[in-house]
Length: 354
Image (cartoon, rainbow, N blue to C red; front, side, top):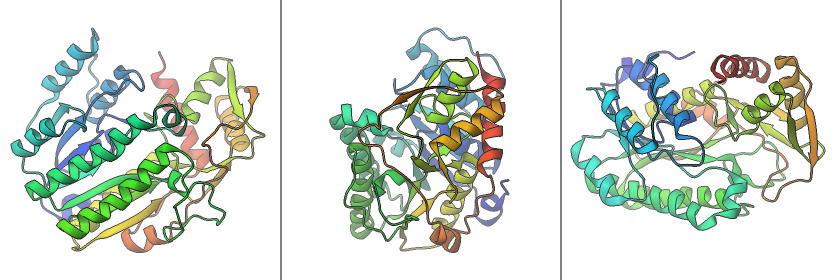
């Protein structure tokens, strides 16, 4: 679905991507390299899930089909960084909380634009580890802005989240809605980053777009997320955790559409000045939990065994993106409906299961 507009409309650029070995990040790395640009990938391979998944993501993003012989985490990641280094790509095994080490990266490269995707993710884990979420999602992000200011990097794309809307009563959710009532530490850190980002734009003229992602899914999706988790459990004839009565709903957005939105945001920043924008990237197709499970059952060809559980603290009842602004400002146009996106994910899952 991607075209080469970034390659055709601007010079070859050097992009720094944080979280470039993760789900969304690896897809973005893949597309930027295909479009002829250079990428610096910063990822700390956090233990939130198995580091081997991120190594596989990295290799897939670089178009490598070679087998990787795993030994231990530190050795494997250093080996990965060494073996994948090229004129157009370099991986740094790095934590964004370590400002001094980040500074060395900015010193060693002429960076044109930063795409900041790295974060501690997840609503429920943030309730258990709120201070760690603050350290990574707020302080880590601020480290990047400080270094952008110091080294003259004036263009910045930042991942925010639909979680900032909380239990917003107005549907669909628009960027102009009040988001002063988050219901999880994760959501609060994302709202905080949006606010602090405006400070760096105002004081230091860093142009930025903050993208509120709405429930991204697709190949390479994190194993803890519902579609991946449910697919695995249904396929293996195990119980799935089914929270509430099935009426909770999400605006599921296929990863290719998200990447298209990120690329168009990059293009907008490269061709405009004095930019501070918050933009929803969603599909505007709301699917209930019950509908999601039914779709997976039909796609996999097996019935789910449901373990009915109460609603979890911090979970929102519904998300629904108003993407009017994204369409008008950057030309965002999602094309993958939930049925087709789910089919693509299940095909990927079956082809990659161990």
